[in-house]
Image 1 (cartoon, rainbow, N blue to C red):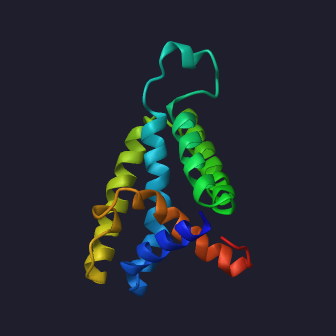
Image 2 (image 1 turned 180 degrees about the vertical axis):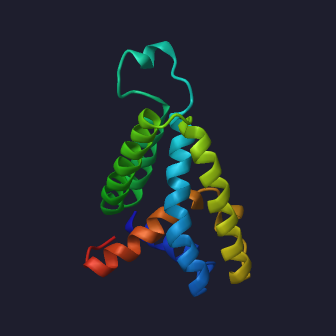
Amino acid sequence: MARRIHALLDEYGESHQDPTNKAVHWVCVPVIVWTVMVFVYSIPQPGFMAQFGWLNWLTVVLALSLLYYVILSPTLAVGFALYAGLCYWLTVTLDASTGIPVWQIGAMVFVLAWVGQFWGHKVEGKKPSFFKDVQFLLIGPAWLLSFLYKRMGIPV
Protein backbone atom coordinates (compact mmCIF):
# COMPACT_ATOMS: atom_id res chain seq x y z
CA MET A 1 0.00 0.00 0.00
CA ALA A 2 2.99 2.34 0.41
CA ARG A 3 3.03 2.88 -3.35
CA ARG A 4 -0.68 3.67 -3.35
CA ILE A 5 -0.34 6.51 -0.83
CA HIS A 6 2.58 7.99 -2.75
CA ALA A 7 0.61 7.82 -6.01
CA LEU A 8 -2.37 9.53 -4.38
CA LEU A 9 -0.17 12.23 -2.82
CA ASP A 10 1.55 12.84 -6.16
CA GLU A 11 -1.75 13.05 -8.02
CA TYR A 12 -3.16 15.44 -5.41
CA GLY A 13 -0.02 17.54 -5.65
CA GLU A 14 -0.47 18.01 -9.41
CA SER A 15 -3.24 20.54 -8.83
CA HIS A 16 -1.46 22.18 -5.90
CA GLN A 17 1.73 23.66 -7.36
CA ASP A 18 1.10 27.39 -7.01
CA PRO A 19 2.64 28.81 -3.79
CA THR A 20 -0.50 30.86 -3.06
CA ASN A 21 -2.77 27.85 -3.46
CA LYS A 22 -0.46 25.79 -1.25
CA ALA A 23 -0.53 28.47 1.45
CA VAL A 24 -4.33 28.63 1.27
CA HIS A 25 -4.47 24.85 1.68
CA TRP A 26 -2.26 24.96 4.77
CA VAL A 27 -4.91 27.10 6.42
CA CYS A 28 -8.14 25.89 4.86
CA VAL A 29 -7.72 22.09 4.75
CA PRO A 30 -7.21 21.69 8.53
CA VAL A 31 -10.08 24.11 9.15
CA ILE A 32 -12.40 22.21 6.80
CA VAL A 33 -11.50 18.91 8.47
CA TRP A 34 -12.43 20.43 11.83
CA THR A 35 -15.71 21.88 10.54
CA VAL A 36 -16.76 18.57 9.01
CA MET A 37 -16.03 16.96 12.36
CA VAL A 38 -18.25 19.60 14.01
CA PHE A 39 -21.11 18.78 11.66
CA VAL A 40 -20.84 15.05 12.27
CA TYR A 41 -20.54 15.62 16.03
CA SER A 42 -23.76 17.65 15.89
CA ILE A 43 -25.86 14.83 14.41
CA PRO A 44 -28.23 13.67 17.17
CA GLN A 45 -27.28 10.35 18.72
CA PRO A 46 -29.65 7.40 18.75
CA GLY A 47 -30.53 6.10 22.20
CA PHE A 48 -28.09 3.18 22.16
CA MET A 49 -25.17 5.56 21.56
CA ALA A 50 -26.19 7.85 24.41
CA GLN A 51 -25.52 5.02 26.87
CA PHE A 52 -21.83 5.47 26.16
CA GLY A 53 -20.48 8.98 26.79
CA TRP A 54 -17.83 8.75 24.08
CA LEU A 55 -19.87 7.00 21.38
CA ASN A 56 -21.42 9.33 18.84
CA TRP A 57 -21.53 9.65 15.06
CA LEU A 58 -18.21 11.47 15.06
CA THR A 59 -16.35 8.68 16.86
CA VAL A 60 -17.78 6.21 14.34
CA VAL A 61 -16.74 8.36 11.36
CA LEU A 62 -13.30 8.97 12.89
CA ALA A 63 -12.78 5.24 13.42
CA LEU A 64 -13.62 4.56 9.77
CA SER A 65 -11.41 7.44 8.58
CA LEU A 66 -8.56 6.18 10.72
CA LEU A 67 -8.97 2.71 9.25
CA TYR A 68 -8.69 4.25 5.76
CA TYR A 69 -5.48 6.04 6.77
CA VAL A 70 -4.03 2.93 8.45
CA ILE A 71 -4.59 0.97 5.23
CA LEU A 72 -2.87 3.68 3.17
CA SER A 73 -0.13 4.63 5.63
CA PRO A 74 0.04 3.68 9.33
CA THR A 75 2.48 6.54 9.84
CA LEU A 76 0.09 9.13 8.42
CA ALA A 77 -2.70 7.55 10.47
CA VAL A 78 -0.84 8.49 13.64
CA GLY A 79 -0.63 12.14 12.59
CA PHE A 80 -4.28 12.17 11.57
CA ALA A 81 -5.28 10.60 14.90
CA LEU A 82 -3.40 13.31 16.80
CA TYR A 83 -5.01 16.08 14.76
CA ALA A 84 -8.45 14.46 15.04
CA GLY A 85 -8.02 14.24 18.81
CA LEU A 86 -7.20 17.94 18.97
CA CYS A 87 -10.23 18.75 16.81
CA TYR A 88 -12.47 16.53 18.92
CA TRP A 89 -11.30 18.29 22.09
CA LEU A 90 -11.90 21.71 20.50
CA THR A 91 -15.37 20.69 19.35
CA VAL A 92 -16.42 19.33 22.74
CA THR A 93 -14.95 22.36 24.51
CA LEU A 94 -16.76 24.85 22.24
CA ASP A 95 -19.97 22.88 22.52
CA ALA A 96 -19.82 23.03 26.32
CA SER A 97 -18.56 26.59 26.76
CA THR A 98 -20.39 28.78 24.24
CA GLY A 99 -24.03 29.68 24.08
CA ILE A 100 -23.93 29.18 20.32
CA PRO A 101 -24.61 25.71 18.91
CA VAL A 102 -21.24 24.37 17.75
CA TRP A 103 -22.63 23.49 14.32
CA GLN A 104 -23.41 27.18 13.72
CA ILE A 105 -19.82 28.13 14.50
CA GLY A 106 -18.66 25.34 12.21
CA ALA A 107 -20.99 26.46 9.41
CA MET A 108 -19.62 30.01 9.36
CA VAL A 109 -16.02 28.80 9.36
CA PHE A 110 -16.78 26.07 6.78
CA VAL A 111 -18.12 28.58 4.25
CA LEU A 112 -15.14 30.92 4.71
CA ALA A 113 -12.66 28.04 4.37
CA TRP A 114 -14.27 26.78 1.16
CA VAL A 115 -14.29 30.29 -0.29
CA GLY A 116 -10.55 30.31 0.40
CA GLN A 117 -10.07 26.89 -1.18
CA PHE A 118 -11.88 27.81 -4.37
CA TRP A 119 -10.01 31.11 -4.58
CA GLY A 120 -6.72 29.21 -4.20
CA HIS A 121 -7.69 26.90 -7.04
CA LYS A 122 -8.70 29.87 -9.18
CA VAL A 123 -5.19 31.28 -8.63
CA GLU A 124 -3.77 27.83 -9.46
CA GLY A 125 -5.92 27.57 -12.58
CA LYS A 126 -6.90 23.97 -11.81
CA LYS A 127 -10.01 22.38 -10.37
CA PRO A 128 -9.92 20.85 -6.88
CA SER A 129 -8.87 17.18 -6.98
CA PHE A 130 -12.05 15.94 -5.34
CA PHE A 131 -13.99 16.88 -8.50
CA LYS A 132 -12.12 13.99 -10.11
CA ASP A 133 -12.35 11.58 -7.15
CA VAL A 134 -14.10 12.22 -3.84
CA GLN A 135 -11.36 10.18 -2.13
CA PHE A 136 -9.15 13.27 -2.44
CA LEU A 137 -11.15 14.93 0.33
CA LEU A 138 -9.30 12.52 2.64
CA ILE A 139 -6.00 12.84 0.80
CA GLY A 140 -5.74 16.62 1.35
CA PRO A 141 -4.96 16.28 5.08
CA ALA A 142 -2.53 13.42 4.33
CA TRP A 143 -0.79 15.58 1.71
CA LEU A 144 -0.17 18.29 4.29
CA LEU A 145 0.98 15.75 6.89
CA SER A 146 3.39 14.27 4.36
CA PHE A 147 5.20 17.63 4.15
CA LEU A 148 5.48 17.81 7.93
CA TYR A 149 6.73 14.23 8.07
CA LYS A 150 9.31 14.89 5.36
CA ARG A 151 10.60 17.92 7.28
CA MET A 152 10.91 15.77 10.44
CA GLY A 153 12.52 12.89 8.55
CA ILE A 154 9.58 10.53 9.15
CA PRO A 155 8.81 8.19 6.23
CA VAL A 156 5.26 8.16 4.90
